[in-house]
Length: 497
Image (tube, rainbow, N blue to C red; front, top):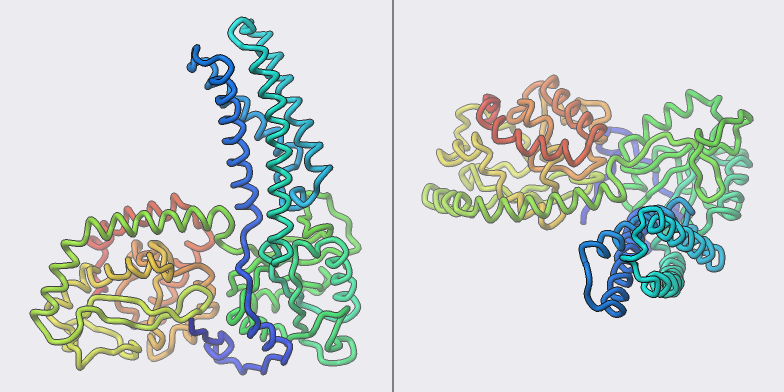
């Protein structure tokens, strides 16, 4: 997939990345997996296995009886065990890497759960309904199952750690001795969780050598944006004192357009805060400065939402799409579909599909000239499908490909302008809207900011709505926007030509 440099896009000069940075960019990248998602799946699988084991023992020992009694007891016990394992702090990637410590806590929690179950049976006088043989057998077999499961889970986690799939690709902002101390702490307590790529620092004197604690200097802070566009970066750790307020603000202003987590290392702070003020990377305390808008399970939920909605929409709207294709072909010569390069997630270049709405010899792939009312380039069919947004329906295939989401900031054409200024020149922080995957519809569109953007105010309104969506994203918000889209097409389409 092609990439562009945000430095160039923002009209800023680009400093050449160091040879070390170019080498990292050229290196193959192992696809990472979310530790939170792995832990969640592990919890679900463990609860299901315990439930199935309890039911299988019940059917084997008792053979019949009241399923309506045993099944709820089994499910409630498995749920209670799941909670107990979570309270015992056994469902974390760091815990999975342990052997004796992990299994001992799991078995202790399982024993407590079975004791609670036994006491509950006694209190509610249900001992005549529960087989002691079944209970003891489930406890013993469950302990064996949990031990084997945790050993297998540990082996998988260790293997993925060695492969780098569970390590967050990380860079440090800062240099000198302070950054060296931070790197030493990371190597000592967080090496299993962090793949340290290098550091970025604006200083060029002896305070910022080319290598710090074995970690190469990759460029200036502004170069980090280009670097993160060309190779995956999950985490940025800032090694600056809290007192450097101006430098911190400048750094955030530069980096907030990236879909990364930004943390401020607390190793330099002389102030002592409560434990709740910190989050931890291994044993390294940090302050949370910015988070990726959509990550971990939220990313899974949005992926599932996109695929389900896209498939349902393609099936239900296929007659409309077929009729549209026939009408386009009958009115003018040329292909039915129009393909256009646009900015996607993290400024990647994606190719978006649309129904062709212009005469073939008058199409404007770069969108350097805005479409206006009664534009002679637009066909009669084109006017209708643009007004009704039917021309956007082929982008459902982009959703299935993974280039677009159903809901998100609309992807703009590469050379789209407002008042003769390119969008990213007209609006400061424009590229922050690319921190999430673009969508077919969005918050700006349902609020009437669709169609022509001939003034800077219009594009600013659209970007402001996009940023609001990113900051307040939820699946329910996506669902609301999706449901409101048909309403807005009828009531707020005066700017669509």
